[in-house]
Image (cartoon, rainbow, N blue to C red; front, side, top):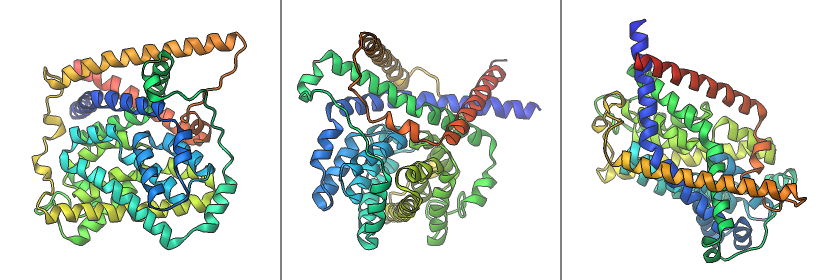
Length: 420
């Protein structure tokens, strides 16, 4: 019993420490993301994106990069762009860029895993897009694409008067919109983050090394960074399978990826795990709602092949350059001093103050919106994040809600054990 209580308090300390490490990165990332989303409207993106070809792919990737968001809102935005006539390949370029080539994800990866993984995330993200484009050109799923467009009900895109971005920067209304978008970003990811960080702490403190060595063949051994092609391939295939059964988006997955790397899983295995936020079970269900099951399974197969190839390519490129990261250099989560006076504390305090300002702007916007509706006005503003909620299967929502309650009980219980 004594041993269990010790492990419990250790797990909770690790979860809270992980979150404290990443807090400023989340706030900064979502602020930048909200700023860009308000300044560059989706209507503008749809006008610029065409059917196919290098220019459309480049624009799809660029617009995805500046619309960074969680998997669920990215799926909703992608469907809207696809419905407005963008080709399948540029739409997927948008989807992959908005979930992989994102600022906040890069910052969090740098904090937990180091620069090689940041390079892997961005260069690998571009590789994912190129491989997906190539696979679409080879498989030519024209009939599937036509069926998917018919299956998709048209997304309405209301937007008010279009201001120039410079005018928006000095407009109070635009800043209220930025506050609204910022709060919506958090509303979408807080459950993923809470569950992801709780699970990472539990795994880090309670799961024995032997489990990882069984699951990821060749991990934790003598030559663990590059244990031979078959072992690397096996780990690259296990990464997406492990991710498939987590309900957690990419932001919640990073501390888990750090735990995997700390256990000696190869660079390719960890990158495949990080890239797999679009092959998880909830995403499959949402795609089936949007486009039908045939298209959803086609997209799943497409993503899996692209993930394995991109992760292997990044792994062997770094191996060739002699730059593969070494897991033994990582400090074990239990041995870290998380809460101390350092740059992290300063950044977190500044970020929390900025967070208060953004929440106040959101509150002002809600207040103005309620007053407007009270006087008989109609809401013409619809943010692209609203759309996904009704499409997320209610079963997944319920499972997530139960997991959130369990995570909160676990964390509070562990805190009490830690204090007493």
